[in-house]
Length: 112
Image 1: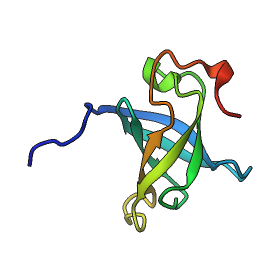
Image 2: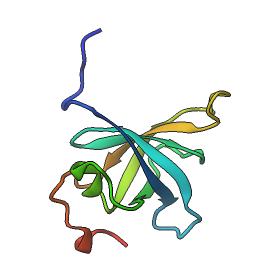
Image 3: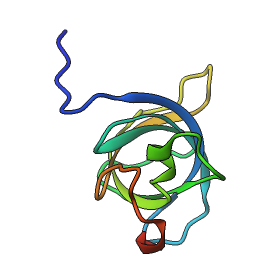
Image 4: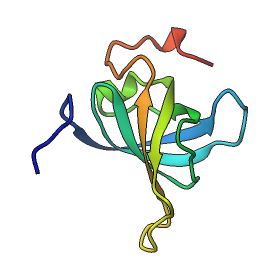
């Protein structure tokens, strides 16, 4: 099956926290599985709803400049697995990052 994506994905296993936005809810430990110019695929402990907005908060210093540029960005959930597979117990979700993913993203002006 030919690839229909606009941009190539880059594999990644950086840890992050995810929380619903703008609601100040508890953070959910997650990790970024891969990313492209416009979005990321995450693995998370929390089930997410399609079209809900989430804040993605990096943990520490990411080894990848593109992921480090996420800082605290807001994204829109495009899809989330119906349930976690028994082997991991984690949900997978695709997120469109508002403003895109860029190593030049300014963390000082990111949404709070």
